[in-house]
Length: 180
Image (tube, rainbow, N blue to C red; front, top):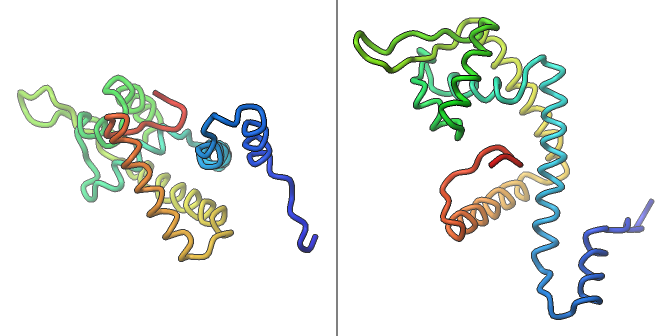
C-alpha cells in the first residue's frame, strides 16, 4: 500500500460544496460528518458486542449506573433517571425488564415513602462485571489507532467541543446517540 492515500469521501463532499456553492461555509463538514460516522461505527459495534453477551444497551446502562454507585449497589428510581439521562418512564421499563431477568430487585425506600430503591442482584452484578470488561476492551481496541497522548488530546478537545455545543444549544445533558 505504501504512501497511497485512500480516497476521502468527506473531503470530496467538501470540495463539491466549495465548487458548487463557494459562499457556503463548509468547515464544519470535516468534523461533524466524521463524528457522526464514528458514532455510528461505535454504536453498531457496541450493539454487536452486547448482543454476543446477551444484553441490550438499556439494560447495561441500568446495571452500570447501579454498579458505579458503590456498595450496596442500590439507587432510587429518581437517581437512576438522572444518572441515566432518560425519563422516569424509561427507567420504569428498564427496571421491569431487568427485574424479570433477576438482575435487579426493587424495594420501598422507607416506610410511608412512595420512593422506590433498585438494588443490583448477584446475577446482575456478575453480568455487568463481565459485560463492561468486554465492552471496554473492545472500545480500547477500536481506539488503538491513536497513541495514548493522541487519545488524551482528542478526549480533551471533544470535551471542549461538547461544552461549547451544549452552551450554544442551552442544553446541559445528552441522551444516547440518535435519541431525543
